Image (tube, rainbow, N blue to C red):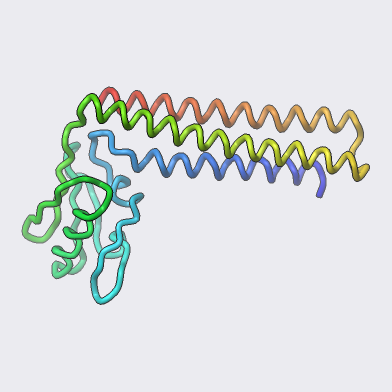
Length: 188
């Protein structure tokens, strides 16, 4: 492994941590309807003798800001979908409308908003831990390259600076994403 491969590996690990955070934040219910609220929960519906993801059984859309509309491909699965949503961690009450399931999104209370902010902060801290773990991996890789006489002492300093700059960039991005999500939670 050379220095460039090491930097790419570190950046890739940090990118994965950010992608994971984006997925987690998309699933946080802010009082605004979003198809990702249902899609990211990985809701499994017991239908056709097996468990299937909701995404494979229905189209999920948002007709307005306060509801999610789930239109199954087969109307015979309406009750199965309703039951799966009722049993999920969404804490929403599904309503069957003729050929679809409607999920009304209730207004968030002040206390619930604070809980969601705490959850968002904890997800952010977990992401920062992953970013720092990637940094540590990078720094250890730099030391190994030095020990194997692949790079010089000057290269060690340059590489360590690059790894630290990457870390700072990703931590700043995490902080920006958290601030935006907290603002969204508190103002909706």
